[in-house]
Length: 44
View 1 (cartoon, rainbow, N blue to C red):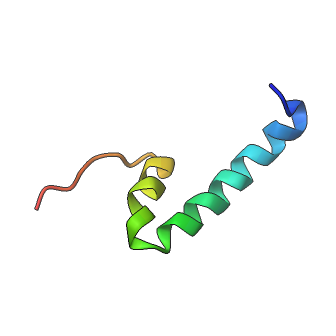
View 2: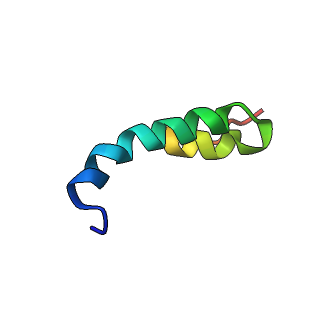
C-alpha cells in the first residue's frame, strides 16, 4: 500500500532476486525454500 502501483511491479522481481541470493548459502536455503513455496521438511 505504501508503494502503490510501482510496488506491485517491483514485488515479484525483488522476491526472485532475494530467493536466488538465499539459495547460494547453506544457512539461508530454508528461507529460499519458504519464498519458493516449498515449506515441507525432508525426512532422512
